Every structure is written in C-alpha cells, then in structure tokens.
Amino acid sequence: MTPWLLVAGDLTPLGGMDTANHALARYLASRGAEVHVVTHRAWPDLRDLPSLTVHDVWRPFDRHVLGSPLLSRAGRQLWRRLRTRGGRAVVNGGNCRMAAANWVHYVHAAYTPAVAGASARCAKGWLTHRRDLAAEREALRAARVVICNSRRTARDVIERVGVDEARVAVVYYGTDAGRFPPITPGERADGRALLGASHD
Image (cartoon, rainbow, N blue to C red; front, side, top):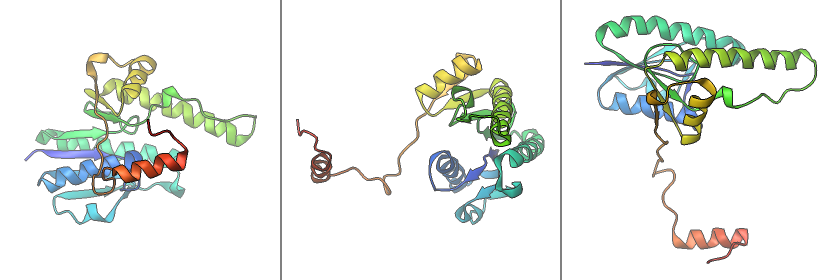
C-alpha cells in the first residue's frame, strides 16, 4: 500500500489550516492508508488511528521561528525513506522543500509584517519574514503541484512567487455539515433583523 507523508506544524480541529491538515490526515487514515505525519502538535484522535504514525518534532519555547527548521529537516529525512516505497507527500507552503504536493494556505509574499521602529523586536520580525519568504519561494518552486485554497491564493503564488501556472490548482476548503449545518429560513430572517438588513 502506498504510504502518505503529511508535514504540518499543527494538526488540530481548532480552525484554519490546522483543521484542513487534520481532516486530510484523518481521511487518509480512516481509509486504511499508511499515514505518517511530521508535526509539532497532533490532536489525540489522530494518535488513536491504527494506520497513522505521528512523528513528533520539538518546537523550542513554542516558537515558530525555532521549530520550523526542525520540522523541515524531520520531514525531508522521513521522505527519503518513504519515497523509495512509492510514497506520496503533502507539505504546506514553505514548511518543507520537496518535489511533492504543496498545499498553500497562506502566502508570505503577499503580505508585509506590521512592524515599525528600530527595536530588536521589529528587527526580529523583519528577519523572520525574510526567512519565511525565502523558504516559501524555494519550497513552492520545488513542488510538483501547488494546491491553493482560493483563486486569490493561486494568483499570489503565480504573480508574487513566480510559480508556473500549469503547476497550480485551486481546491477550496470543505465544510463540516455537522458543525455548520444549513441555516433555516427563520434563522436567516432573525439574522437579517439583527443586522437591520432588508428582506428584499
């Protein structure tokens, strides 16, 4: 059976990219696939899945800037073993450079950090941003395919990072119907009334 590798900072159901990565890992493992996750934090339900192995990576002082190089190194080391078995891998943005699928949730090149002044904290913010930009550029250009969570993200990847459009695909996040069921006409009317919106 083809093994899967997922490299992600956090795999939790708490929101955003963490939820998306958590859902992907859970889906693959629930179908019986051999799944390996390289992460700083995995939710307990993933650890209980028999076909999923969590490879924990230390994040010193719970700081991204210190943990991200360790995450990247651990991901590449495990990938060297799994790819000889025909493995498939999914990484996120600049977190790990490899010729695999890169699932982009956020584009560092599209944003400028809100730092001002000449303090050590501001300098650290700029240096971290520059490091993240370089890692993102290298990882996205090395990827076989870049999967973006929106058309806007895809445009940023193409225009700001320089990824060939032919290697970019857009896949929007799904919605958990159990947590976010369709609203009823009454709920919609109550919401409009609360906002003072017209019913037209």
